[in-house]
Amino acid sequence: MATKTKLKLKKECFSDFVDKLTDLTAISDTIKLKIDNKHIMMYSTLGGQVLLAFKNYLLDTKEYLDYEDLEYSIDAVIVNAKKFVKNLNFLMQSDKLTIDITHKASPDDESVMIARGIQINGGRLKVNWIAGEHYEIRDIDKSILQERLDIRLRKWNFIIEKADFTDIKKLSTINDGKLLNISANNGKVTISESAAWELQIADCDPDKNSNMILNKKFLKSIDDSKDVDFSIFENFMLVKDENTNLMLSYEQDFSEEDE
Image (cartoon, rainbow, N blue to C red; front, side, top):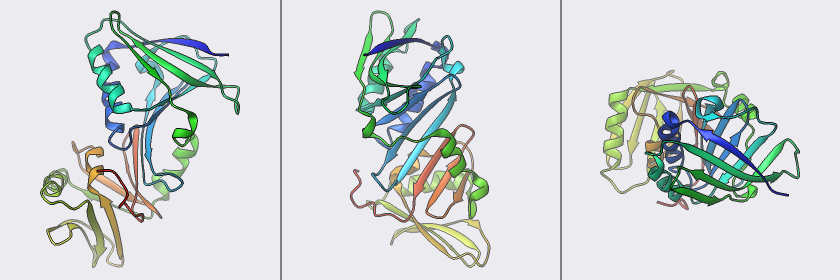
C-alpha cells in the first residue's frame, strides 16, 4: 500500500539543491536520491555492470529540509532528470516549497521506502514526477562508498593548478576528439590530445610510468574554482571535495557513450 511523506524545502537552499541535481545530469539523465535523518545522498552513474563514471553529493538533511524525525529512509529514482530540473527552475521565486513523496515499503528492507511519485509544490505551480524503478540505477550504500573512496587507499596523485585546468578545458573544446590522454613518465605528468596539444601539469615520482584516458565530457563535472587533486586508484581516478566525489574509470572503452 502506498503512503505519503510531506517535507518542507528550505527556500534559501533550494537553488543550491537544484544546481547540484543539474550538475549530476552531466553524468546521466537518471539520478538517485537517498534521504534519511542524517543525509541526503544524491548521485548519478554511467555504465552497467562496469561503472564508467559516478558522481555524488552527500548533504546534511536538516540544511535543506524541515521535517520531524523520519522513521525510515526514502529512496527515489528520478528519470528524465534534465527535464525535471528545468521544471524546478520555475519554482525559484516561490515563497513556500514542499515536497510530497508517495512511496511503498521496499521488499528487501522494511526500513526503506521506495518512491513511486514526487510532487514539488510551490503554491500556484506544482511539479509532478513519476519516480523510476529501483533497477534503473545501481543502488550504492554511502558507508561502502566512503570506504572504497578513502583517499588513503589511493596509489598516487597529482594536482592540476586552477589556471592550467582552465586552459585544458578551453583547449579541449577546439578539436573534435572525445578523449584526453594523461601520462606519467620521467617524473612528469602531462595531459594531451592526440595530434593536437600537450601540456605538462605536474611532477611525479621518477619511477612512475602510467597512461590513462579521460573523456572530455567529464571536465564540466569537475569544480574549476580551485586546484584539482586527482587521486589514482587501481582502476579509476577520483576527484574528491568536502561533500562530493567524482569517480572516473580510465581503462574502459568510451566509444558507445552518448555525445
